[in-house]
Image (cartoon, rainbow, N blue to C red):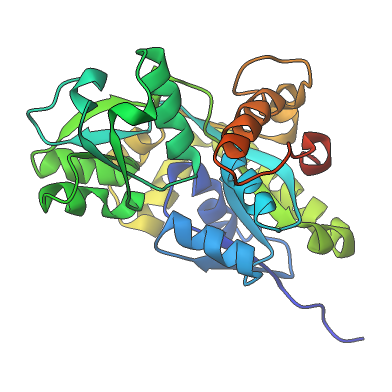
Length: 294
């Protein structure tokens, strides 16, 4: 009997995806999966949309955006919640949210940071009309600010560290509006239907790896330091503000009656409104069809 085609999952260097690195190091990745390392998060979305990969770890906002563009996707496993790990860096003379008025802000347009900045602006009684949004991928924000192309921009993790090292200012973080950034394993509907047992095995292995790390915290940090080349102290600092989920701990995220993030139905309703206003969706996506934990 011929071997089944490997199921391909993209990976970027993000603290919430550290379990994927540990799964590989601990030989916990089930047979029949291929992990592909990509440099940029937005590139993983392009690959998912084009069918180059079967699954990806991305936000619910980006999942709905791709569904609006015709992709048939299922969110099967929340992986991590980050609060304050991403944020907006700027030229050093800017100050606070009001410092952005009239300024050029680099974001990935129509993705999670677009939703985030609008929520933060609204919190301070500002709107999109008070700033100039410029399409810049998060990995390129530091370079764009230093080059004078933008005044501030959204980025995360190691890029924030790079920004402050280069003399830029961390203006504020996603802690201004927490709960929006739940990353999840999102897969093509056809792949899930045809390979349910394999995806279930992957989720089980992911759970096992997180539980192993919880029981062996220092061993996990040391292994990740070995894999990434970062010192253990940096691995630990990258995990600050990041909550890793197993199936059991993620259960509350699927409460349909919850009215605020990080509950996925609450976030999904917010994202639906955003994409309808932006013309990406003509009508709300049926969240019950997309949110399919296994």
